[in-house]
Length: 460
Image (cartoon, rainbow, N blue to C red; front, side):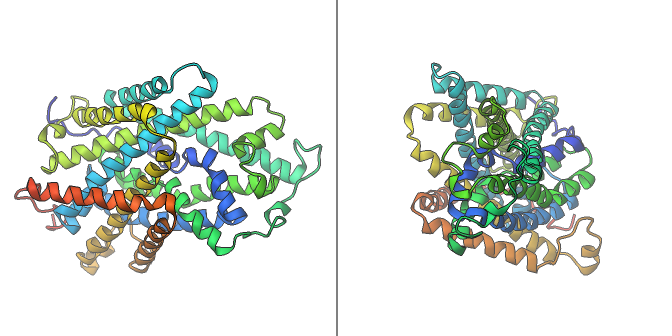
């Protein structure tokens, strides 16, 4: 190990597909059924509203990332503009939320591999998933980028296929004996919003979990070959991807099937492909779901390693984690994350299924903290600029500061909704308790960066 810097080996195609893949998780293929039951066809509104909030958050992150592309991204910006404690909390919180998410993802891989190989113990598949994704991350950032590119491509092609063939069924009766299904199912079973605005609000917490990971684009800024070009391009297309992949897919599915029947016969994707006469649809979607889970785990290991590396650089984690290999990979930081994730393999023995509902809600709380810190840091960043400096920004927030305040209010609403429902309320105990523990450790071990002022904050 040495003190080589991270290498800028991620190309534009890597980052664009990573940004795309980050928006498309296991939740769309299997979890969408539960969200549909909450809101009916109006679930599309939930995804659009949540997508607008994410677009503002990503625009705020992009404004800072293009101005100052560094490893650690939002944790570094929180430190520079909000203070060392905010940066420390944001970095360690993000490390923890991805550990929790990766535990859920490697368990998802084990569950779906069990469909094909029911005689193999679940923990073996969880261990295999962790070992393979960990190895990819330890080789080189280019290896990570290549695998993430192909993982994302598989998901994208599957969803585009669903939208195209489903659109053929809606308009031309493809797979339905030539009888066009039309879109009347969107309002024929209790109306477009069968559970009223309450159903839409109930679904928002689940929708926001689906968007967890999109902020990973900011972490790539320290290893992107041309961050001034690639980061804005990836961020600008976030909302349109959400419209196409989430809203487009759900529009097709709920036009073909009455919303209240979706989820009663498994994945809505499997139902649609089987109706088209594709008998192996269940196997195909099972493969896609496994790649989606592996993709999320791959990205999670990448994120935890880079965040721990950044924390160590600023004295907020042991210095050994600030070292990289000759290829610029923070291997010590990655190895700690991988070892911590071995507990996920153990949890396949010990933890009942109920707990995985809890860990996803805990991860959602962690994501909301991260997104809130991005917005607060961006507001402080802009206040520190003169009008002339603000005018020179290459990538600017729309409708500043109104858009930032509206997105912050939306995040507060989602937290309030989490407090309202019993299954997600536990996140509001564990999440803040973890933050309190971090503050205690920060004070006890005096983890404030010594003699360092934020480079950007000092006007450098």
